[in-house]
Length: 326
Length: 58
Image (cartoon, rainbow over all chains, first blue to last red; front, side, top):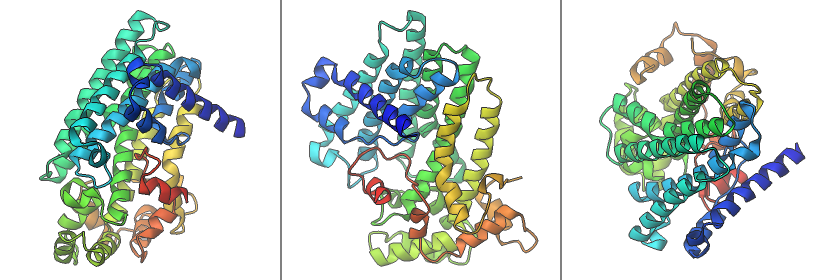
């Protein structure tokens, strides 16, 4: 296990080294600083997915480094811009200026393409990687734009969720599979698995954001966050009280009371229900993919399920993995 | 399942599946912070100085 963690750490360093080798990056202190602030989290960091997909289809994890580096660059780019779109009080644009933060976002997106332009990768695969990365980039930007305005309904919420995180997660698995020599159909299936995992993470992230203190940016666009949307629209006894409290989320007491309503109204429970439902779907998709070695992908899946399972264990569920929606 | 359908299930006296029973117990928790104690939730965060990452690494 220690050896595995060490290898993962070395992999992360290899990714950063590759990005730093771009002349403009090496000469750009802000790009270097942003990269250094990124934390690697074993099996949870999205740049781990290409390596897992690559190994799962029979390739060597090292072959996936161009894809992992591209995903790493893309994540920095997405976070820089997402913070601007969300008016996030912690966003780097406060320090850098909005224009410069946006420009750095563009630079990282372009660096992602450069990572894929590896002469060691067969030209046919390289072209497919660029196409996948470009589709992911425009898909994510489209989803982020949808999420930047107040959503009007539950249907619109799920449509937005489907466009926001899934393209990145899907492309991360797809690119890894392509770098591992997978057939198109297998790469498609792994992309679908990644997309489903992306939806799972989106719900998990909404839950986390809604329960944090002080109030996260999500409270400023209430219908874009699933538990908040639930508490605003479900027919529970504290609905009116929640509508009033949630409009004053900058006041700590109002936020604390609103968060308690998220629990007792069933909003948190609904998110957990959706996570169980989406996890079931992901498990089905994964089981249908003919992989040489599914363990690396299953490890990532298990890491994402862990907080959900711990939460269920905290209310007395002995075997959370056995709970089913049906 | 939609919010409205879930809510009906959630409050229905005849719905007693293991999952819904567990979700009802979850709704009885007093403090939202319990959710963070249950494990890392913010999987999307990447920065070392993000409060969510620090909170869950502590």
